[in-house]
Length: 109
Image (tube, rainbow, N blue to C red; front, side, top):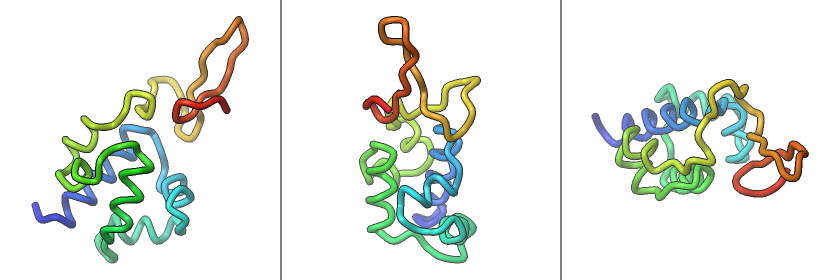
């Protein structure tokens, strides 16, 4: 597997592990969903700047992203992992003093 294939596989694995859609990743990167789709299909490539941005978005080191899907998902912080039963695109919630509070990336929603 070459580097471009490893990055595409790692991004796909991260999308799956977090339950995030290409549209949500695109919004975080400031690009269109079509641009993410082209990069994932191999029509376009992920630049090193893209890789740094993707890694930062998922809270992992860029070297873990470049290492491939196994290392990227192992490095994914627990708070970013999909919770069974939670729909993709929804923030996890927790209860604080009897009230449900949304949480995303460690901060209150």
